[in-house]
Image (cartoon, rainbow, N blue to C red; front, side):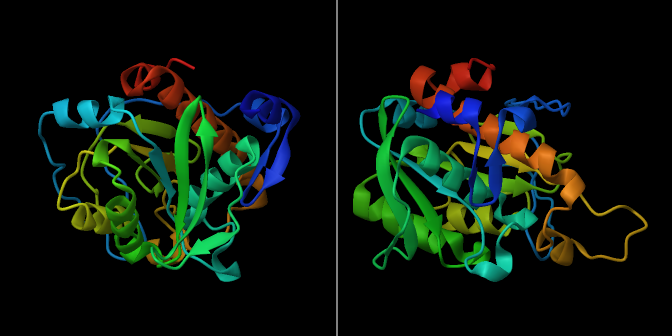
Length: 254
């Protein structure tokens, strides 16, 4: 189903998944290299947490469902904005796999949908708690469903990467991204959960637009092809992670 949709193309939430968009000339790189990402508000570059990846690898290889979280802000005001690219990825994945994402789970404060991706059971989530407190919803889901951090995949925007660049990482710090910061806090302080970062770039040096304003802007028409291609690459990375494992997915296996 995933490959057929990527080939045929369709509009889902923030993304238009078309073969033409996926083929356009933005080079997407999916790597495990360390680097920061940022969200709205203040951007604090703190050193990433460094620890053994053994527990994350152990959790991710265990049996049980994966929780795939797309970060963003709820409501029409924030549709199609840079900060909501995580929502776009989850919406696209849900459409590709026929997963219903219309139900708000009031117990967690997130829109949830369940299904399978790459032959693995998944729970898709879009926190409705607003970006800066995304961890409140993620923490509740993890506790209620018994999902270990190593099987929590978070998709977020990344100010520190060029527009359209996709990076899959096994773990890392929040890099100043308030949504990731909140998730770390509500997962008991651990940084050992995988994440996909989607580059949205930064305002130009001569711009009068602040970072906080920039992340809440909608993508320009001229940027849509790169955004669409990045969303499509995220879906391929997620499918590879669930089909082949985290290490192989980070090495570029698709």
